[in-house]
Length: 256
Ligand code: NAP
Image (cartoon, rainbow, N blue to C red):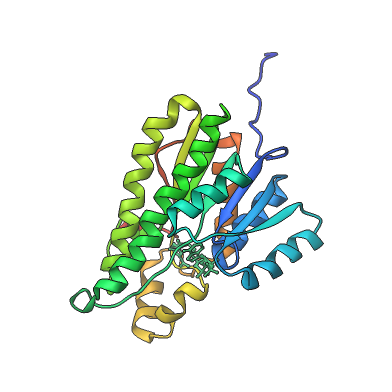
């Protein structure tokens, strides 16, 4: 008999403070529920308080300690001020993101700029703001960007969107390298297609809907619930040696 069996790392987040950006809809709601369920105190952020409030109230009604924060990640200075005032946060899940899908030949500069402003610039400076707070407090943490399978492959009508998600993978790796010695882990979660308001446009087009189902090897669309376990894994000590990488939750899309 051996008396030093390995100890199972904890998936719990008791005593941790988490910030979820994009928490009023879709994957962000799932992330907030998952983190709260694992014991974290969660601050939910988005631009529209009107859309955020019902989510915050539902979490409170379920017995979770939560707060709402009005945040536009495309405004880097305001984001940093808000994160500094409300932080530090041990965990960040950045699920704030937008899409303006269309053929690359028809991309307009305003659409290009607005998708980059939220998905790349916003994600970059939000991640950095949370890291600054952790470094000032001399604490480690886990920073998670909701990227996409489109960070690893391309797709029709998605040149701008997939460019932004490829960029997120790039800065995630570099930040993980820079902040590893501070105990700050930086990773992405890469979902396949999940039914949320963001994908309504895609599923309104029968050709695109068929394309999606043909590509997902497990033969079904993703759900918000499919992302929740990945969030808790990456946020918790269960993933203590995981940094600078992407966790694919794509039903096998990118396998071939
Ligand atoms: P969603 O249902 O449209 O929710 C997007 C959330 O982001 C909302 O809470 C929205 O609230 C917030 N948001 C948008 N712009 C923001 C800004 N500038 N500042 C702060 N918050 C902002 O989208 P989703 O499907 O959950 O997608 C969430 C993330 O997952 C996105 O990054 C998306 O690219 C990624 N993703 C989604 C899928 C999918 O199939 N659904 C697949 C792969 C990756 P406000 O509008 O009130 O700000």
